[in-house]
Length: 135
Image (tube, rainbow, N blue to C red; front, side):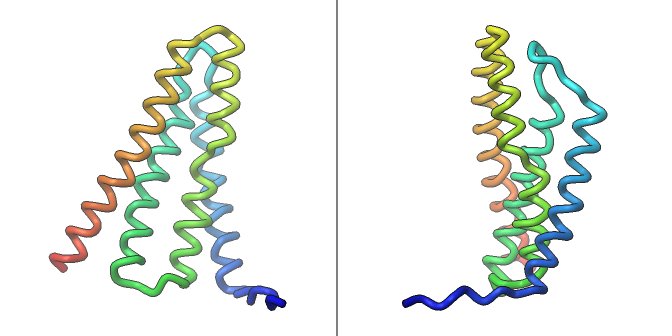
């Protein structure tokens, strides 16, 4: 029989605090850039790419130099980046585009989100790794 996992209260508090700040940042941007189903959802696109960039830096930095279980990694990676990015909002926006028969916009948004998100993680990870090696 497996034992229950150990709960690290400091790590949970870091995730909560990071999640709170990431959610506030995302909500503020979403409020300032409201979108209709026939428009490109810049707010969601921007926070998802920004979160991918930040996650590439955070994960690479902790993987290369720092212990994997730290409050900093939980705060930034799981908490802040997890709350800043929003897959569920992206899916709702895509559904609205499809319901409104904006097929080209939906396909473009999907492709650009996946390509730019992956590109952002790869770019920030490479730049971070290069910086860690030269430091």
